[in-house]
Figure 1 (cartoon, rainbow, N blue to C red):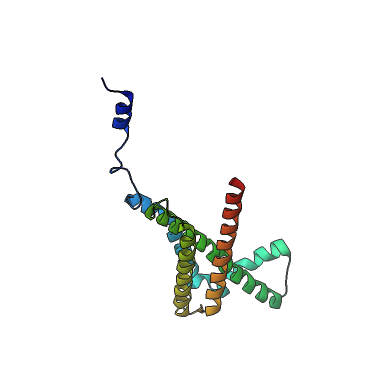
Figure 2: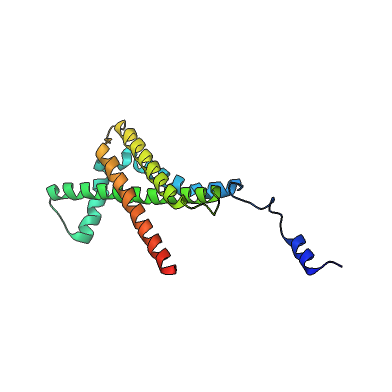
Length: 180
């Protein structure tokens, strides 16, 4: 008859068969990167000629008028520009957060749990990935007839990502402080 300790040892899975860092299945990696891929896809769709300024003004202005009242054409031009640039800021902030999530999950799976630092690595990699996507997006728009590529927009996109990362870090570390 076996002792209780022997039975428990026999029932424990072998460490060699357990998924350790980096030993994840294909679905793990697909699910880790789908959110970032969706964010990049949305950016690619928004980068088409159909979402150029002359097309968005027509459907945005009735919404503005409904919620805030009618405005003169000159005022609408500036409001429309601000809405579009605000869209850059918020959109790339969201893309940065999606990249952060993907990098965070990836690094956590690859780096041993005893090693700290994957939070900040994920943050910097998310910022870098967002800058690369923003730059590519603006270069792409340069070749579309009714769009323009602008380094100014890359700066707005980068600022959106940075602000989103700062908000995420502030929330994370404030919650961490409360639990300690």
